[in-house]
Amino acid sequence: MATEQELSDFLKSVEKRAFKRSVYHVRNDESALDIVQDSMMKLVEHYSHKPPDELPMLFQRILSNTTLDWFRRQKTRNALFSNLSDFESEGDDGEFNLLENLDSSDASTQVESAESSTQRAQIFREIELEIQELPARQREAFLMRYWEELDVAETAAAMGCSEGSVKTHCSRAVQALNKALRAKGIQL
Image (cartoon, rainbow, N blue to C red; front, top):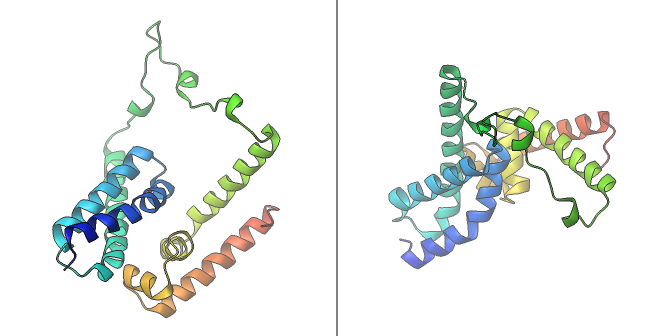
């Protein structure tokens, strides 16, 4: 059984990576934070009696399921409503101006040149788009192995599949990403 301190230390150790992973999936900081918090609460509420060495796999599985639940809710919500509330903001004249609501980066905080920054951002965007195009299981295996840095056994346990399946999914994901990025002229 994990002590309260062990549970707290574990949650502190995974919070940043879990948040980054969630942001990568849902592309929204607030939603990602909600997903991570819900996952942490579920772990504490339902699995605090488990030994500390089982917590990483349990948490990864809970995080994956909570993310899938978020996507299901979004799909249902979007099917029912056309929601523009993310862009609703009135200016001084009472008119909505989309351009005023878009985030713009402060050029004075940039150390690298605008050209290299733009090029780097474009490459990252292309990589993210290609990762999003991967089949769900390949994407999940790829992110757990290379983003979360879980080993094959941990990834298999979190995904609920065999180690061979994890290796196959990762191999296919890497091949697909390599092929797609080379076709776009991106060499890593």
